[in-house]
Image 1: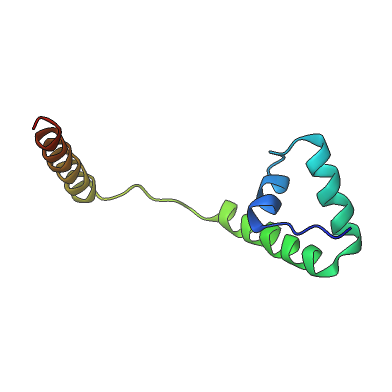
Image 2: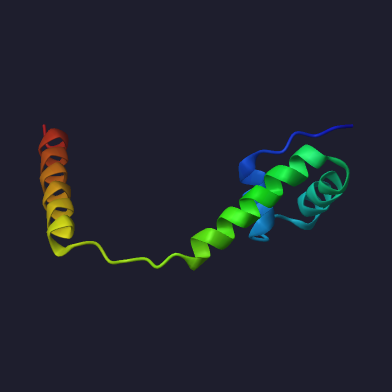
Length: 83
């Protein structure tokens, strides 16, 4: 029986975030399904690129704008629920 696996399944497999049964299913499928193996390899390669990236902190003005928006929407929601 052929099972379909999603990218989310493969990502969870890569991060070892699946139960043993599901991991075994994917491992078996990877051994026999070249297309799935290709997608898996692309995800692993992408993860490697992401892990090498240098992340920068957001600019303080960006944080300020987000916080103002959050306060504004929280106040609006509070007004809506008080009616």
